[in-house]
Figure 1 (cartoon, rainbow, N blue to C red):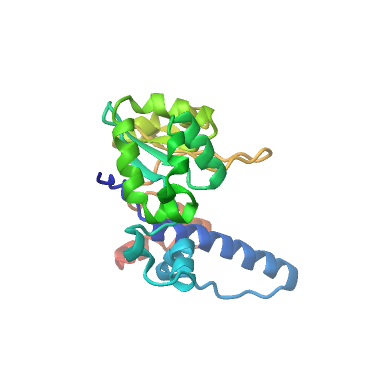
Figure 2: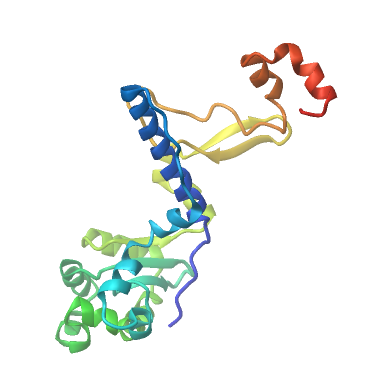
Length: 239
């Protein structure tokens, strides 16, 4: 059994953006209250570390090398990616006791309750490879959507590991207007990601495509009082 490699994203870059926006807002609110500004300091290193809650906790509070003991960097099993009959990968999380009980029931694997290798959450994690070797062939017998429907109805977290193509057509993605059309000045009609946060009174929207290089330079500089100097700035190569 071999785990599927997930789609790569730039987590440190994105999380530092999110953290920085929160910090800027917090600093601004303090300035409104006290009249004092402050320096906002954020790095990719710290943003990345803030996402590693479980691995750091395991490093400090688990005896020995957790990854060497279990072959995993988390403390959950069954939890992972499983290839289904249609070639789509399924992700399932059923580590916690209540989820495990529902999982073995709906998957008709109640005999695993009596297997000492899987009797507790810690035992399941230590024997994750053996457990996944048992359930992976089962998932390979039917398409992903069948398993998602079965597991979710039973109260077990499960979902397809979508390609980008499947993701943008997901009914929830469409309903939440997370893919919107824009008219680009050179590329024509394009699809872009929508606004992920919905405000009830002041909802945001994507109103324009990304600008061309220098498209708004004159407009911005003119708005802050440099309109009369634009020609000179161009001549000097500043803009």
